[in-house]
Length: 112
Image (tube, rainbow, N blue to C red; front, side):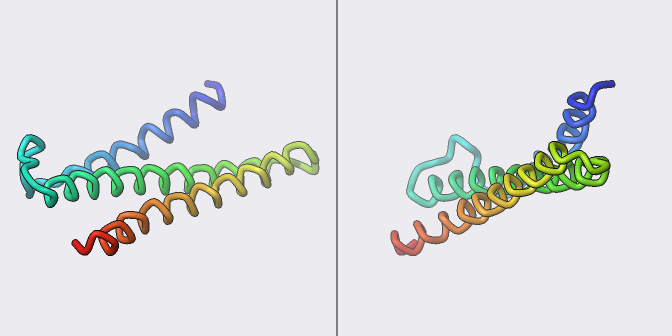
């Protein structure tokens, strides 16, 4: 099994719980958007799903970077790849946190 296949399996298995948690049993049906509150509810669900997805991907990237670093064996190219992957993961976490905070900022501006 190739390295890409293993990563795809881990990412796939990690996404299943996120998709289950993103489902909310309460609230209006998707066709019940009749006012601004319905739109805000849908946007909150989308933002929360994206936040969870980005955080899961960032966590997997941190684990992948740690694996690369531990198995580098002094190879400078692998160490550099691990460092870059860790930087990308940190940027991903920052973007996810900004996306989560963006909804609050918009709600405060709109006064909702």
